[in-house]
Length: 295
Image 1: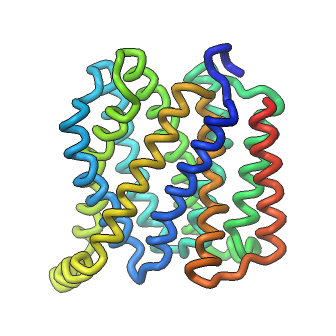
Image 2: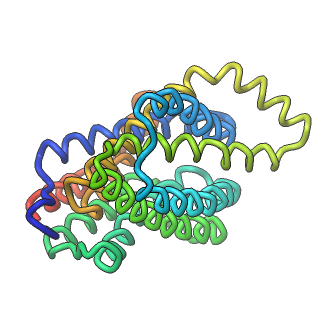
């Protein structure tokens, strides 16, 4: 552990895993759609609308947190650009596990330098186990990945970007809570301000006719997208709150078990096959979680 005040207890583990289920639920919504860019933008936009009244009730975070919010918003612009590129050159089943699976390793590498939280050996085993398990669960055909060079560039670039905003938000939410605010205030402000860039980017990429089609599509999908936005808020709120109680790298790794839950939801809702590779990946993820808890 990085300090006696930071401990990955079982209640925190279970809460973060619950947040991973929420994260997987809105990603399953995107995966089930015909236009993943549009559904992702709807989730972000409606998430901002859901967050706004709650932010008006809780109030904004203290000024000490604002440089981190500004930094996170700037990094998220790169995230959205890389996300669009990844989805353009490769499908969700290839790019999503890479983006989400390799980010925790990079967070662990960066957290020692930026936060002073160098993971102990057992935590490294847990993070590596979760990363390997996520890759096994998410990548149904690993051999095909080498034939999608551009998609891999965007996906690995986005893994680095995810690691960057995770560290920045981990530092930011700690500064907010140290200033007497709630972690939720930081999260709500972030979601309100972050609800515009990606939908705007998607609209700018479409023709006038396509924008009209988006509007018609949004009128049908908005209830589900609003639920997805709410799940996204809840998931990230749990993760950032946990980062005020436990090491950032450990929480980041636990959160990416969402890939496993997304696979389980895919089997249930989309009738996808689970198979031996995913079963092995599940075992590796569980072992990684146990190693993190014992670190």
